[in-house]
Structures are given as C-alpha cells and as structure tokens.
Length: 613
Image (tube, rainbow, N blue to C red; front, side):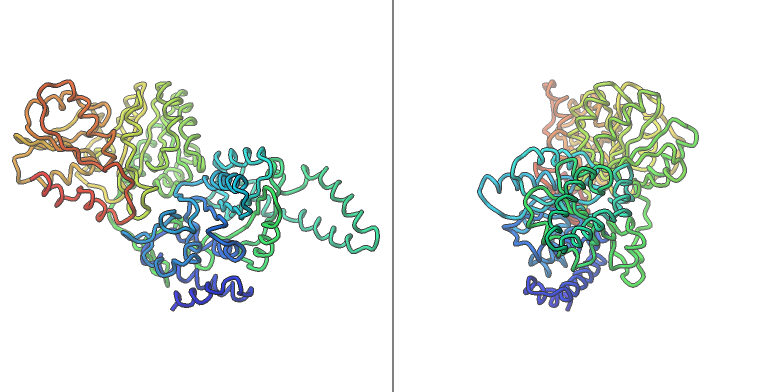
C-alpha cells in the first residue's frame, strides 16, 4: 500500500539518499492524487510543493523548528510527512483532517492559516520570540508568488530589516500562479527572474575558478565581491529583495531534490534574513493538473485516469451572477467588474472574455479592490466587486472610509455567503451580515432565488443613491423560479410569503425556502427579510403587534445579523413576541459537507420543522 511505503520511508527520512527522497516524493504525490480524487481539495498547488516540504523536513526538526505555510493549500505533503499519512484519507471530511494547517490538529502545524499573505508576519513573530528566548531554532515561511504580491508580506519584510540579529528564511514558491494566473508588475518581475538567472551562476562560477588560483586567488575574489556589490543594483536578479534588506538566493529548480536540499542546507546555516526563490510547476506529477492548474487548484471529485471532474448539472448562484453581469453590461457601458485573483471561482471569467477592457483582476489585494472601485464610482462608473465573503473581510477599513463614508455606490457581490463546506472555518462566510450591517450608507440584501438575485443586481445599477450595495448569496445550487422581466426593487421592503397567526418565522436568503417547506402545513406566518439593511420597520412593527412567538433564521453569526436588527427595532415596543434567534452560535464552524453542517446548525427542513412545531 502507498501509505505503508510512505511510513517506511519517513521513518528513516534523514537517512535517505537522493534516490530514496525522490521515491518518497513519488509516493506522496500518488497519495495526494488518490485522496483528493475521492474527497476533493487543493490538488495542483500541493503537488507543486512536494519537494519543498520534503527538503524542509529533511533538514529541519519540527516542531522545535517552525515551518509556516502561506494560505495552507500547499501543505498536504507537510501533513503526510508529519505522521498523518492515514488520517490524510479523511481530508476535508466532517470531523476529519482539515484542508489547511491547523494548530489544534498537529504540533507540527506552527500557525493556522486559510487566507493568503500571513506567513512572513507570523514567521517574524516566531523569530523575534526565538531571539528573546535565547533559542537557535530554524524559522521558515513558505509563500507563493501570488500571495507575496499582497501588501502584508512587504510590511513584514520591511519591519524585519529594522530588527537586529533576526534569523529567518522565506521560501518563495514561484509557480507563476495564485489560483488563476498572476497579474501585475511583481508577476512580470518574477518572470524576469525566472528567465534571467544567469548572473548569479556566472558570478559563482567565476569566484570558484579564481579562488583556485594560488596566492592571489582569494584577494581577487574579495575585489570582485566589492565590485559586484557596487553594481548589483543594475544587474543582480534579486535586487528587489536585497534593497529591502534581504539576501536573495535563486532561482532554483523546485523539483530537483538534490539542488533544493543543497541550497536549503547552505542557506539555513547563514544567519540573517534570507529569501530563496524556488521555481515549481503547479500540478507537478499529474498531467491533467499540469495542463489545467486553475481547474485543479480547488477541485471536487475526479477520475484519476481521465482527469474528468464530477460536476453538478445544477445552476449555481455564481452562474446566475455571471450571466447577469454580461446581460447588463451589453446595454450599460459603465459596468465594470473587479475580482481579487479569482475570476474562475467568482464566475467573472466570462465577463472578462467578453469585456476585457472593463474587467480587472487586481490579484490578492482585497483592500485595493474597494478603494479602486470607489474612485471608479466617483467618475460615474458602476463597479461590481466580486469577492468571496470570507476574503472581503480584509477590506473592511476601505469599505468604511473610502466607500461608505464618501457615500459611493459601489456594488459588492459576496459570493459564498454562509456555510461553504469542506474548506472549513477560514472559508465560511458567516460574519458578513454582521461586519457590514454596522456601517452607515450601505444597503445589504440576500436573495432567496435566481430572479431575486438578478433584480437586486439590476436595482443596484438603477438606483444610484449615495449608498453602497452588498448582495450576498450562498455557494451551490440556486433556487430557480420562472424568468420574469427585470424590476427595480423597493429597498428595505420585506415580503410576507405566508399568512398565519400566533407564531411567526422570519428568515433571509435560501433559508426562506427551507422555512416554507418545513412549515407549509402549519398556521404559521413567514416573512422574507430580503433586505437586512435597511430593515423593514413596518414589517417588524406588524410582527410585534400580531404574534406571540417569533423565530428568526439566518445563516450568519447570531451576533449582529438579521436577528439583531429585528431586536434593535423591537426594543422600543412595549408589546413584543417571545423571540428565538436561530443563527450560527458564537463559534467558528468546522469543515464538512454543507448539508451535514446545516443540519447540525438546525437549518435543514427537518430541523426547522422539529424546532418550530
């Protein structure tokens, strides 16, 4: 068995020769491919980082030494190499292994992660603590070329250069991609480094040759070294990093085990701030992933032999957004679309293909996305910023100060709002209603079907009031109803979808459909609060005056969402019903299939029926 072979090789990892390490890399890749084909997961990125993980564990002693992974979807080999070979078969399953490094899962996971660009900051914290504690352990951050282009890594690198006697290493895993192909000037710079590594090799070869000349060789090397330092700003490939105060090494072949171990070993022994530029191939070892790395970045179940991915025929809310953006842009030339390194995931790639001059993939820079969109709005453009709910959290300051404070009608499309599924706590969009609702000058809405989603997007283009829009929709299958003509919605208007007496249930988004199904044979009233902000004051007053009990269902944190909004309005009423809030408790929801997690949280049709009846 593959697992048995991996156990056998890892038991003697530090005694393996190069051939043995290459064999181990082969079996690790097979194990990753087998498991991900059954469970889904982040395949291409982890396949590309196998030798990096292998070299680190060959030369380091975790958990005393610290390996901090960026984003974490490159870390499957790391998990397998740290005693989780068998547990790996439960990858992303309910109560199984997390798809990302998780401190509570293993002492070898030095830092929990799920979003990009945090590794260098965390590694610097570890390095400072190591210095203060008098330790001499190795601190390594592994970051991709897509993640390093975000602002946070450079903030950390800048600070590190101003702290004396800090010893840490950054491994730049350069596979020319983040999730989709990288964009921007820094990406072009890395392309240049990959294509022009000749200077470093030429200098090293020359120094080696001169050093062998009797008597004068050593002095000549020292003279050349002084001269090279004087001209390195002109010709040395890593000048960008050296000017930040970091020693640069590379680029090196990230799949040549001997070269990568030799380089890591030498650099780890050098004290100070070091960055090793490693060139890898995303999807390495699986031809379908190598050919289509974006498709196999985050992938569902697939057939190993054919590369055919199991796809649902169901239309998703993301599909609806993709179609609607194009439909509206065909008659409205002011519509622009912005996404942060995820044109595939957000469904905005078709818009890019049709209207490239009005599409902007700004890389992993969610903060920049909001401010960029704000300026577009000032000039009369209609910017749709399409970002996963969990990633939009990073732009809160910009949404407050640059968009809402300035009363600008930017439209935020919050994909994957609510429970996401197997990616777990870092990816669930369970806080967006809360983190947006407290901001002035923003309208927040969530549709219960495809036509409402289209109308909400249409409304945002027609009612250009001095407010932003946040349209939140879940991952997965859309509730489809018969097509109708587009209409401008009345902002802040709830809909009473079922008459009833004594007991009332309020809900938003897809949960309205579940509530309707659960209570269809009851005498209970149902309200759809499709606008979370502004809340429908008249509907709240009607509920307060006419019902004995109120249940509020939302797939959002119970703190600060729809339930909180209703309670705030009812606070002024003397007469009010007994209220039960049915949202997500004060917790981080673990990973698992959407249907399992929703049932656990009480959001399934059956659980709603049991609770209310």
